[in-house]
Image (cartoon, rainbow, N blue to C red; front, side):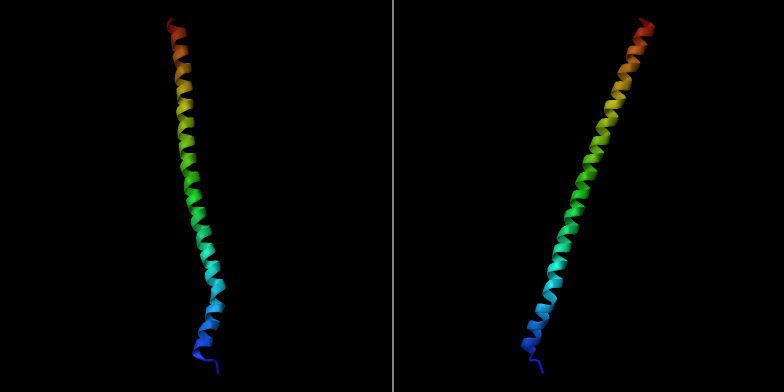
Length: 71
């Protein structure tokens, strides 16, 4: 018969790899979520700036066309 102390040590040693794997998995998932959010934020800013630049170029071209017609 295994004594209570040996049984608790055995269970601790048996569960330790699961705890370590779980901890590393949680850190990995959390890191991926944070990085995904940062990439999403950067993409939103990039798209917004790109659209603004495109609309500015179109407006400038329309101004040039309007000035050449009415000049």
